[in-house]
Length: 270
Image 1 (tube, rainbow, N blue to C red):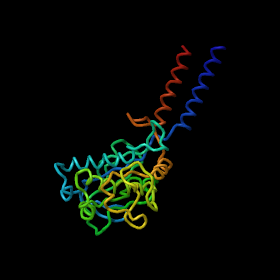
Image 2: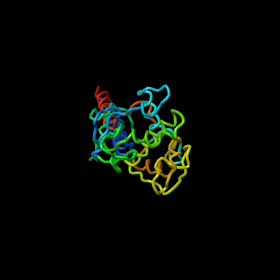
Image 3: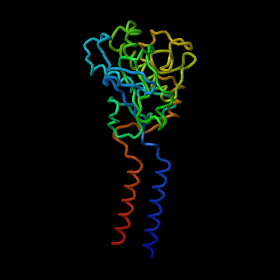
Image 4: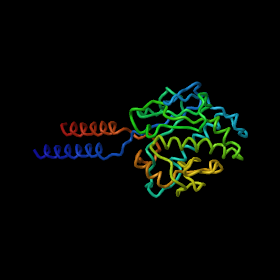
């Protein structure tokens, strides 16, 4: 009888543990932004069409297409994961993923929540640097859609003359991309300069339009999200432990705990 009571207490304790983990465990399923540089004749949700990204129009020195793409991707990731902010706890990072892929392929990490940004020469007449659907990376309705575009030929035509080296050319493209991705995460343009950990007094969500009328020379700098914007990102996408290896989904943990529970009961029966 005493053994039976002990078993019941252990079962109850494990069930409480399972319930607590299910309720209070941070969301492990992040949204993934897929960056497409290679698809020919792709179309975003606004009807803007692009061909594949052409790095040759920028004048990169001793860098091929793959090198340029890798550097752009790394710079975008650094904008979201590479800086320290007061609101970012030690050992935590934004709950979002980035990867280079192709439209229609889906994310290689298996995330169910994902969307695409197309990078390339615009062929449908748009004259601006890029655009994105405000907040669409955060809603399930637009999952799997091309929610933003980076018009790399327009960037080269309008801005490449301000860059003096490869790094500054990368900053022009990556800064534009992170700005538009910020819009897809519901960030808006600021009214002026804002405190940030980057090289410029202007944060990544600043624009050349009024306001805040950011000078184009600032675009070659390694800009960062402002402190205010990053606090908003923390609220919008949440935080997770810094990623070293894949985090199992809560359902996986629940299955493991259930198996442990059954094992304990089985052992007591014998």
